[in-house]
Amino acid sequence: MGASVGAVIPVSAPVRVAAQLRSAADGTVPLVHRGPDAVYVDVAGRCVGLVGTRATAVPCALRSTLDRLPDVAGASMRDGVLRLDDEPLVVGRLVDVRVQGLHPKLAAQPTISGAVVDSSRAAELIGRGDGLTPYGDDVLCGWLAVMRAAGIETPEVDAAVRELASTTTLLSATLLDCAMAGEAVPEFVAWLAGTGPVEDVERIGHSSGRGLVEGARLALSGLERVAA
Image 1 (cartoon, rainbow, N blue to C red):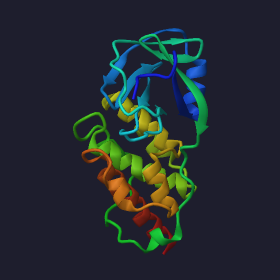
Image 2 (cartoon, one colour; image 1 turned 60 degrees about the vertical axis):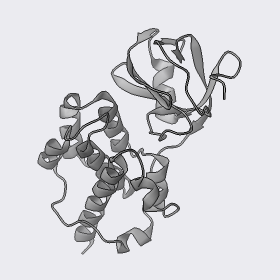
Image 3 (cartoon, rainbow, N blue to C red; image 1 turned 60 degrees about the horizontal axis):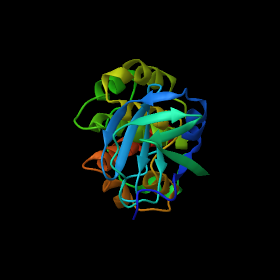
């Protein structure tokens, strides 16, 4: 497939990402990561991505229908539109990336025993591991997303995450912010809602999916103890 359609790359956008881009100042933005399946840039201290059909649709990324992304040398913002080199990413549709609640069947699934995540445990997890999204951050994202799906706020953990966000990667810090807002990848949202299998989540990335599931089951275990 070609790199663009006409002079633009059409994309769909999570609601908060679209709002962030509309309010962003004009100018060059740094590249965080570039590859044939995903490109990430730094827009005012927050990671924004463009993903192709083979990449995980993370909640901070614009989604394209490209099988392979174009080679990118630079990125910029102009009039609320992100441009890769000089090709604008034009948002044609908004997507809801929020968790949609917990399906009752999850309560019957085996859970991991252990302490409920608190601010101290969160501080131990942030940045622990390798890659663009360290495993400890993936665990925290799973835990936070389940808590939001259950309608539970976690102000102390949120404060710890925000305080230590600079100690992990920009992409991971952004995904933690997404999780605090109840946003997650579609496979995880579907699993929590009971419309998709956990195996789809576990297959994400090298270990990211397993981290999400571990965090989710920690949260579910804590919810079961509270209910009991």
